[in-house]
Length: 475
Image (cartoon, rainbow, N blue to C red; front, side, top):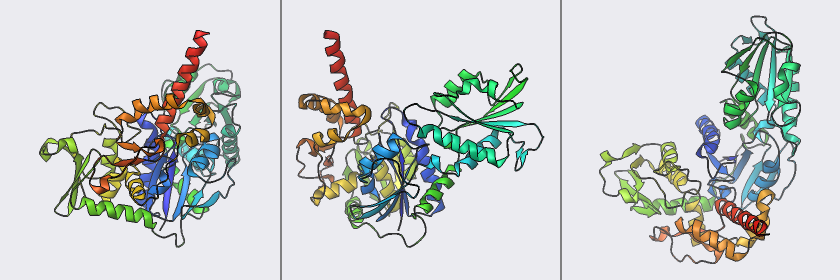
């Protein structure tokens, strides 16, 4: 048995941030090479601190869904997963045994050599004339591999140069240039560098966003997929602007190659993780009798299960949107009734107006999407195996822009927690609160919180920053 975990950044504000990881998980899940494919996030749920507990296998491969090596792949993710490693990840990855699971952590997908093929695939979408040996119409064509660039981490640009070199050696294009938004050589100077009459620009970005949709077209004067430039230093030129590499379906193949190279695919694999399976069997035993989990009502019906918001209890099914897949449930519960993003799923904001009819396997996945890690952590708490992490420990672990939460005094943390946590179903074990009965005992709101979530950490950081700004203004 094997589990694959895709780690994305996620967002407390933007619900679209997680979509890429979901999409690739679905593509890989359909291939059937892994027994399960799980998504985890830095700023959403399941969090990096929770995600390993949600895996069903003792053989776990973790792949960072990032375009290059850097702070998150070398510092944040290894730290939060408990890998005991900081710094560059070797080409063969890192293997550790954590909580009885063998965990293999790989390089981010963006640095894999197979990404050069994804760049070419994107180029062909906007330039169908590009054949296996170059442009079929014989027009000299240049390629610009466009990276974000940053002076803070040289790895961000290194992967751009490496891909440009691979593609230059391939001979499909008359010229290949590595250019950047935020460092030299900048893409705004492309016309001075490129001599070919036709130019293809492929953004080496993980997803569509502000830069690919607005910043780049605006700064370069692009009017669409194809833009003519009649008067450049090298004569008339035509620019073909491609979509970012990170959203191409071929990235799924790159991810699978990474997993295979980490020995996470093929071979006998691991065993079923006993604690995980025991947790879900305890939940299913409850569900077969009918249950409440937080705001979610689970009702058995003729061999299948219906789930809905408990506030919709008694409403006729015809009055509700009917969902039949875990993905449908996932997409519905990620936003409130008002369309706001729900990065913390145990906030009392589960949307209404829907029901899902599911078999037992899909029920498990749907409940996982609705309340990530809640079944596993609640069961572990009942077995006295869930160790709370005090705020002071969480604060000391923070780095980068979040390191300032270490300066927060207890009164500040509690003030923020009263505002944030008051709307959450969880009981704050990390703050010394006690939970004597859980939803597994029939108490719907009985859900443990072992550690302050990243949403609370971010809010405490803002509180510290506000206090510092106020003190500065008083001076």
